[in-house]
Image (cartoon, rainbow, N blue to C red; front, side):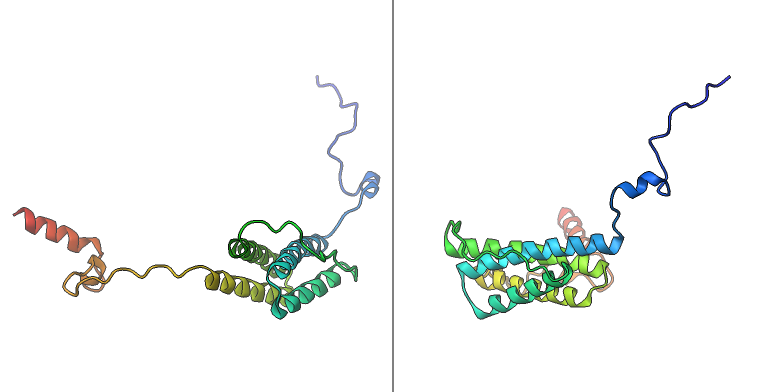
Length: 179
C-alpha cells in the first residue's frame, strides 16, 4: 500500500559517519568563546575610554580584562587599540555613552561567567559594572530634588494605615466631598 522510502533521510543521527565531517564543540567551549567575545568588546570600549579620559584605573582594568581574554583563548593575546581616532561629540557626553555601553557589556559578561561558573571572570565583570555605573552617576548632573510639600499634605501611602491599600484614602476623601 505504501511505497518504501528510497532516499536517505536528511535527519541523520549524530552517530553516523557524516557527523565527523564537521567540528563539534561542547557547551563549555561555546561559553568560553562567548565570554571571550563579550570581554573583547568590553576591552575595546575600555581602550576607547582610556583614550578619551586616561587614568590608572582604566589602565589596570584593561590589563585585567586582556589577561582574562588571553586565558580564555589559550594564551592568544587580544587585539588592542593603541589610539582612537573616531572620538566625536562633546567629551562628557561621549564619556557617559561609553560608560553606559561598557556597563551593558560587563553585564553580559557577568551572565556568561555565571553560566560557566567562572568566579574570577564574574568578579571582574561585576567590578567593571560597579565602576562604570559610578562613572555614569558621577558624570550626570544630579536629578532635581522633589519639591517640599507642606507637612499637612500627605500622600495616600503615607496617610493609609499599615496593611491598607494606598488608594483607599483617596476614595474616602472623594466620597466625603460628594456628601
